[in-house]
Length: 200
Image (tube, rainbow, N blue to C red):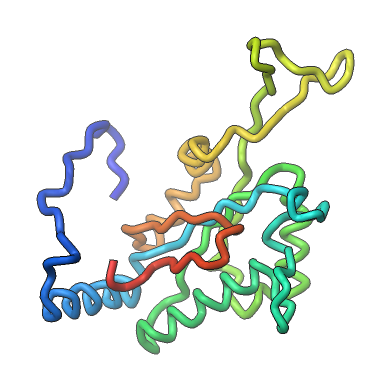
């Protein structure tokens, strides 16, 4: 599944035009997508490392109450969507793997949040947390920023660092052991995201 030596991946041989698709074609893609989920070949990866400072809170964004009547956090909303999607795909569908990228400062807080809430009904073994790497922060002139006289300011390495993070955490091995072939990547702050839509 994850080639050890191959560095160049050929482009997909076919490009599909949604606008010109017939209803039969759309139904076929919907059916195929559900089968992929039912076989346990699809997973979700969520970027959830950021603090909710822009939302006016000091804790991770995934724990934020966005103002629903239910007061559900973003993490709970995402977890319940995974449960619903599993049920739609069929009663014999295995738990959908969920990778959650966190940062070093929020890791313990989020682990405790999930434990306290019993993983929001998910199987604990279907959730894989891994940490985002940090890099020295630099200013616009390329100079390293210092927190203190003898302490370098560190900052998260950005979304592109996810690939190295997956390798370091052995998350790819975890996905491979579950037979996953497709991964949908999304951010925790996008509450409207429709991950793993069977049609696509």
